[in-house]
Length: 179
Ligand SMILES: Cc1ncc(C[n+]2csc(CCOP(=O)(O)OP(=O)(O)O)c2C)c(N)n1
Image 1 (cartoon, rainbow, N blue to C red):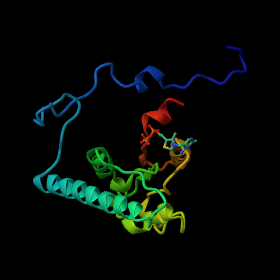
Image 2: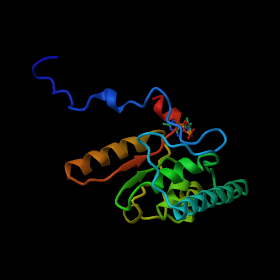
Image 3: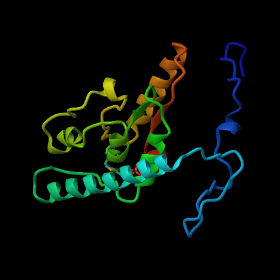
């Protein structure tokens, strides 16, 4: 490294890597196990709310697929099978935190209080969306693969410079990470 090179970050990149073994709180039978470092602080009411959001997400998803098949939407990216990941992730955020979604995050949108019909504008080709990103802290759906990760990282850096102690969450698939 030349003397003029930027100083290495104080953060050891190795600490940012995921563990070699996946963290698994639910076993194959759906039984919850305690795992060190992953305490669960959820009340019965939280579990009911989470379940309600997951059912709602699947119902909205089905309706959007029907609308696409009827020709009312040009395209629609289904969230089937991702209900828990989207709802659980978004539920862990506070109101001040931000989400930068891909095109598949209808479930996360619901948790953030976004009206699902506003999102459908994008898939109908009438507008980018009818929701207010500032009010919901939920960005516009991002069609070009992986671009929302850059939006999220940039927003998070800006928040850090401002001393704004928030979380910025992004969702993307394995196709996005391969690039
Ligand atoms: C830059 C770019 N290239 C290609 C596409 C076309 N495209 C739409 S979905 C998709 C697959 C993405 O896979 P992944 O990132 O794993 O996300 P998933 O849809 O499986 O959630 C591709 C290639 C795109 N939207 N943007």
